[in-house]
Amino acid sequence: MYLPLSSVQLFDKLKWMTSKEAAFYIRVSVGQLRNMVWRGQLRAHHVNNGRLRFLRSDLDKICVPNGKADKWQYPSI
Image 1 (cartoon, rainbow, N blue to C red):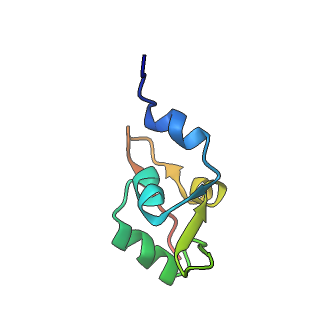
Image 2: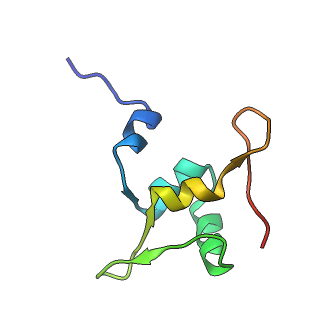
Image 3: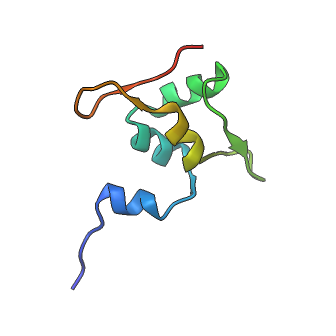
């Protein structure tokens, strides 16, 4: 029997994430994620084919709960 993993279970197993996965994880668009990299708010790693990869630990560092359910506050530059 196939039981789908919740997003929490899925991300617990990932160390590296693609842009799309990282954007979903921190609940922003891929464009906003790239802007955060460009502004220096988030560290990204380039792999051989020129694509960006993100460490989950880096994504966890920038997310700070602001007291509201399912909302995150991002640190300003």
